[in-house]
Image 1 (cartoon, rainbow, N blue to C red):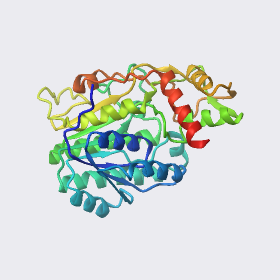
Image 2: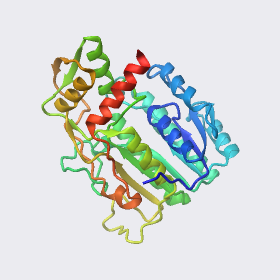
Image 3: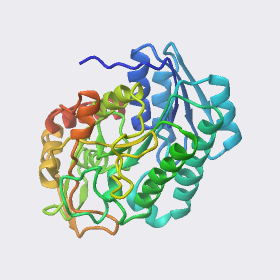
Image 4: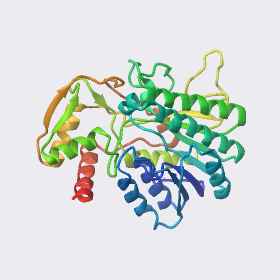
Length: 341
């Protein structure tokens, strides 16, 4: 199915990031004008972010501004000037383990930054605000597959807590000001141009260099790995589908995924968990080398498994991810070899 996007102008935060870069390319390919915002944080190598921008900047319809989204005046002025139809907010401080060491970075980027976005959309209304949440909000939940209709109130990391807070903040602004807002709970997005702090990136680098990889609770861990092009397509399709208030919302039995306000939550995953040992085997195959493994116990903040129920997303936009893990990993390793020589 062809990607469709009804908005003609989209303001995209985190445009130099992994997912933001791919979403920008998908929007531009549909003739959508994109204003990218990014602070080029040094959380990982800014040269990779600059390389992504170098591919976007020559594209017709793309413009870029560098500032931190927690700077409310800068963000509000950019939104006012650009007169965007929709905002896709992907800028955030990512990483579960990093949140154990640098908690204040998450309060600034994920809470203050999101408040800037909400306030700007309040004063300069848009047709649709889409923002990045995370599968990590499911935290201590044991029922699988994870459903948007289940409670998600037991996060096991500060990163997850800030993402759940984003969902609650979004609901309050949808309720108070009628902002149509959609939160997307992403499940382990991977692929070319990925983040160097992600496990698959670290594994590939170490295997190709002949170094050992740290493997945490290999026999216990599984993840709902989702290829980045599939995720980008889902986002672009949803951009032109702002939520309406749910006529069936029952305040006596509130559904966490819907509301009386124009508010919605969707899982964006592959609905096919892959065990960590198989995931590493696919990287080994793509690299043509065996991994040297250093086995370690599960880390604080980690959960043993993620598994997405994506029926709501499929019902809304007629889409579910289709890229097999072996194809996605091969594409990543091919990109890695090309980019890093």
